[in-house]
Image (cartoon, rainbow, N blue to C red; front, side):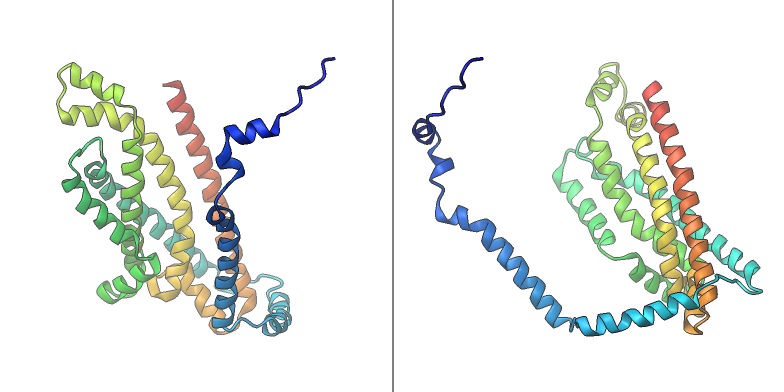
Length: 282
């Protein structure tokens, strides 16, 4: 065995002085950032009136509520709860589908490789940012005041909120597509519409389908939340049972939501793998 060559520290220091003689500002940047983050954390806890004594005192109340939830019991309202769960699933499915359908053409206008002009893309991207910047719950409150209580307001809230998110995600997928197919269609005499239809869309549609399936699963939970403020579905039933302290029914509704989300996740995972497999074969 050969003896490892001794490292000449002086030579390395002379070759890479910036690694050994870093300025004080660079050495203190990380500790200063950590101290600032801790200071902001402490200030936030104090400003929000965080109290460990109140937290630990509330644990006993949480334990009592958990005991009151056992066993889950729908009482005589199982048909009503099943109908409410169907409304929640319908809100998530219809809202997500509408958002995807309307966001796809707009995302083409926001993609750099489709609309090269920054002047034309900028207002579209800022419009999508403004839509996406408002939470689904806020949109639900807005649409409830516009069209009234019920599932229709929930569908509109999810559709508008996801429209902004889909516009951004779809445009990024389109910008990441391989341009060789587009160039081939252009070289063969195809029009810009042919480039989009046969060059871009076949590449991005599997990605878009996977994103839509994920959002359907996520929006099932969102539809439950917006139902609490009056957009219908199982969230409304959950809020009513919490208000009257029917904890056994509350636990049953929570179990229904968990089972529904798990089932949707299982189905969407199978569909995503099927789409990816078909794309790989193609």
